[in-house]
Image 1 (cartoon, rainbow, N blue to C red):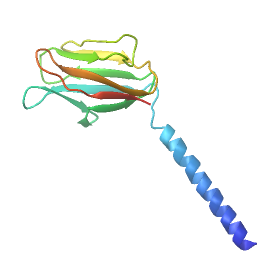
Image 2 (image 1 turned 30 degrees about the horizontal axis):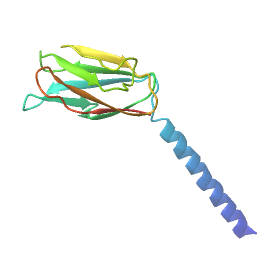
Image 3 (image 1 turned 90 degrees about the vertical axis):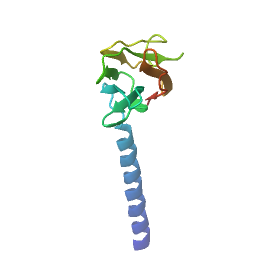
Image 4 (image 1 turned 135 degrees about the vertical axis):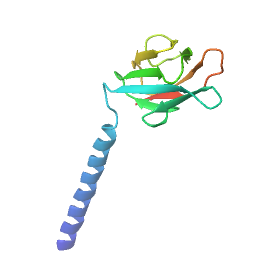
Length: 130
């Protein structure tokens, strides 16, 4: 009987840990969050993306979040072009030499786009809507 109680308690403990970890994973999506992606000139002059101290090539967001691209360290004009199926109303946006901001309004999925300086080939990052 004591062995069965031990198994039952162990099963409850495992279930509680699983439920707790599921809640933790759901909290990763910060709805209404603000995300700033820095567009900076790389060593070769092409655009590089920085996000929270790391690469901005892949950024995870939630519906209702705000995403801004901000030009840092240059006075050049940059562009942000989404391909069909952009994560906001409309299919394409272009930036300017200061900032571009969108509000995420899309289903879960990966949204590829192009960002770079006018006159130069861009880079191909992705916005992931959770």
